[in-house]
Amino acid sequence: MKKYICTVCDYIYDPALGDPDSGIEAGTAFEDIPEDWECPDCGVTKEDFEPFEED
Image (cartoon, rainbow, N blue to C red; front, side):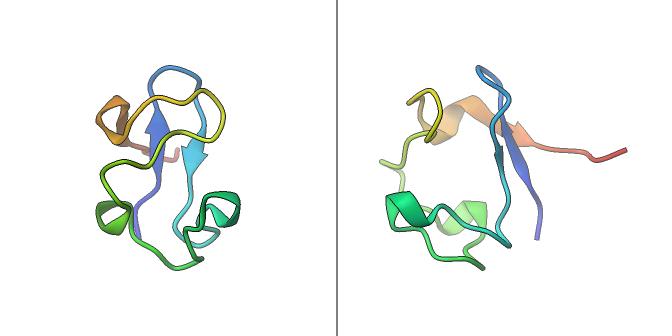
């Protein structure tokens, strides 16, 4: 599954880890996160994330 990065604070959402503090279980694809989810580091919405390309 693809990782996504916050364009505001550079937080990386890794579906293998999820976001347990926000109730997002490990293994949850970014596309399956609820639309009202916010970046755990800076609070922006999913609209401010883009696919993360690892080098």
